[in-house]
Length: 473
Image (cartoon, rainbow, N blue to C red; front, side, top):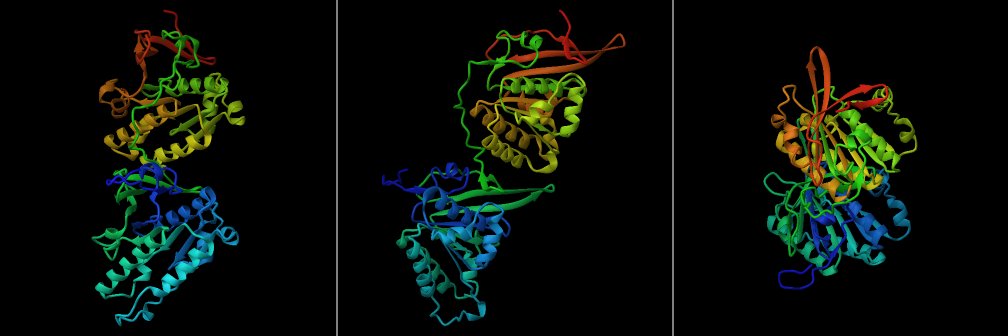
């Protein structure tokens, strides 16, 4: 990366999944980074993960200077994430220094300075050759200083000293009322400022971050959701995807030979997105399950998100029509995630999907149904989430089956999720129920299929103990 004056701009990895992409390469090497936000946003966790990943992945020792939590408390807090701070300390890769500052000890004599801190921090850095430093949090350091002139002077001196030392430093700070930090100065003298936020909307909690500034470097400017789980922090740059994915020429079966024959290439393209829409009881889940089993038979891994049925109920119901999921669940080729959409927000659903894609590396993803997502977001939010979802799957050449419940009047153009997804899907299969002479009639109609010809008329079918059976035309 080059700065505006043409000089090389060195960066180091943040150690946080997704954040390197948003920052276009990582944090500025040898410069201070400010991470600010309200309580519970994950500021300390950002700093600790930055240090731990630097040690484990890049062999860069680090120093954690805490002004609030003790060494033992910090170690306990991150133990569940797989971060063994005590072991890193024993290996001389990490120094943890708890600096306890009493407000009553700070005297407003005009002589207050940070020389003692510099000596202590300098010794910790030099003792292990540290490349990364975290100061958590800066408010505790200046909590008793009321002389604004002195405060500004010492903050500037601290940042200048860190730069001269050549260490990459994360400084955490509490958010002020009308400023990014309580003092309102740190954000102006930091080279990189990241604002983290923890918000609850309609009883759904979401953590988000935004890069407020990054001197000398381009960076993502949107708000990005991030997740804290048993593996630490992960950020997904869900708004930065481009239409540069590859398209496969390979054809895969939908699981029903008669259905495959309705397409000119006897199936659909691998890595394509397939929308299956219809009113209640039109067999959307059954068609999705056929595709899932067919994928498993090809020795592929399938990730199935069920938003309306439990795993046991789904397995039981499919078994009654000859679709046996149990063997594939047992051998690990079929992984079913069953939960209500309201378990978390739209962005968090996408984050979880990203995480599972990375861990499980599935060949097929099924979401049944996407229309349930309306209960956790408005139309524009669902549209944004689904666009990102389909792009993510296409980027990874993953087969995507998306089912959607349409309205009873059959006017699909007014259905919220259909309106969103129909133009994005490569193949759209619509299912209908109708009554004719007192007889129920199910039919399937291929609305579109990009890149191949297909049967244009509705195909009637029945659901039997042996599965779906198409009628002869």
